[in-house]
Length: 131
Image (cartoon, rainbow, N blue to C red):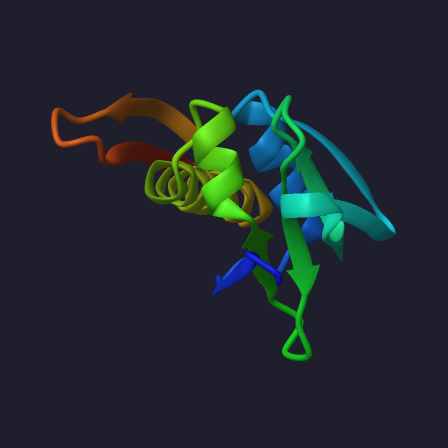
C-alpha cells in the first residue's frame, strides 16, 4: 500500500527549483528517473529528489503541463525528520518566487539596490534602472 501524496505546484523551472533547494540547504539528486523512497520500500520516481537524511525522500515529478508536483510519503518524512509538509512547501514556494523575481529583475536590466525581510516575513526588493 502506497503512502505517497502528490501536491501540485506552480514550479516550472528545474534550474530555479535546484537553486531554491540549494539556498534552503537541502541535499538533492536530479536526473530523469531518480527514486523517491517511501514506506516499506515503496518507490516513486522523480526528476529532483531531496535526501531527507532518513529512509524517506521528497521528490519533484514533472507533470504533463510542465509543472512539478511534490511527491513524498509525508507520514514517514515527518516521523523521521524535523521536516514538516506545510513549512517545507511554504519555504520552497517563497524562496522559489523570490529567486524568480530577482532573476526577472536582472534580466530586465534593473539593479537591486536593497533587499529586506519585513516583520511579516515578506521580502521587499528596491530596484532601479541602470544608468
